[in-house]
Amino acid sequence: MLATTSSFFKIKEVAVEGNSSIPDGEVLKLLSRYMDKNTFMVKPALISEEIKQVLPVEEAKVKLRLPGTIIVRVKEREVMAAIPYLGGFVLIDPACYVVKMQADLDGLRIPIVTGIEITKPEKAKPIIVNKRQDVVEGLKKALKYLLPMRAELSEIHLDNKEGEITFFIYTLDGFQIYLKEKDLEEEKFLLMESVLKDLRERGIDKGQIDLSKGAPVFKAF
Image 1 (cartoon, one colour):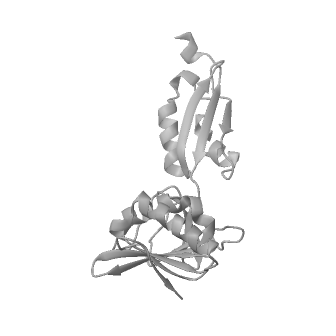
Image 2 (cartoon, one colour):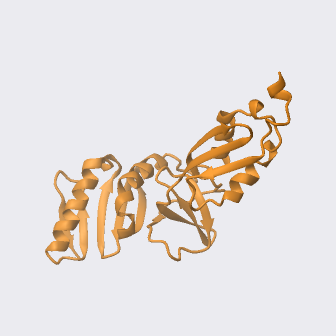
Image 3 (spheres, one colour):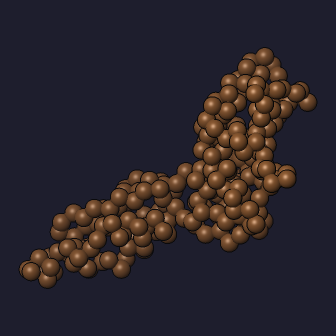
């Protein structure tokens, strides 16, 4: 009983670890209402969920250090691509969560996602696609496998023909890769990297790679 009433066991400090793009101040502001609360009355699991609902993080591990410190260790969501929105861009991670919104892409080497229209993006929330929310699952698969080569890409275009979603992936050096939704498996993307490497080594720098067939089909531009 003494511990839950003693002024010695009150939250006086919040320590933030693991963050690079999210300022400490954003976490401190979010958790300000816990200051001066009794340490033994604070629930780390609830704080973790609260952080994940508001800030663009994959994980938020929270622990308490006596007598009165909240320690928050976060894993930030990694920006993978950008979606045009109202004259600016919505930056998303491979799971299609909104990381941030900004006016331009200065200093970022990430592809732009085209062919979809999103509505009311909110930081730390999944994107909502107008009329075709079902395309998000396919986009998530593509972004997951394209993450290692995002700096090589200029655009990821989604096309909807007769109810089938197809993907056109454009590289900065002039290649267009064509895939159907059924092709969004890891082996197809490993094959894409292998074909691109082979073509570049042979001095070929423009053309379409069709991966929707049983074997890759290349057509020079």
